[in-house]
Image (cartoon, rainbow, N blue to C red; front, side):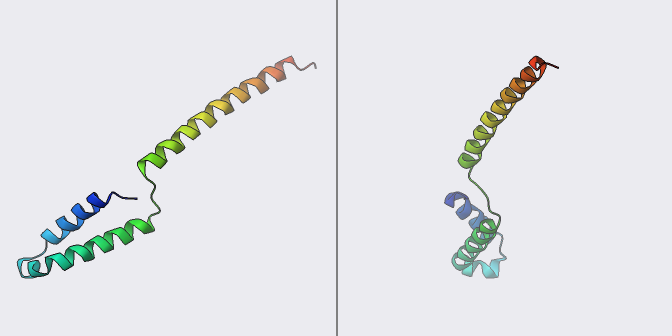
Length: 82
């Protein structure tokens, strides 16, 4: 999930962009922007960088194992009589 500090920063920047007459509502607007952004990101089904890195390592190990097994099969096929 997104870092809460980043979410707060994004909400603050959105509320800072409000026209001057709406600045009085800035605190409430910031909270509303934070809620909207958080809901939007929740719908995206995102993963953290850490989760992504772990899965990338699993994929790399799986790919290496697959290549080793393919080499074994190729070697067995060349030894096969016939």
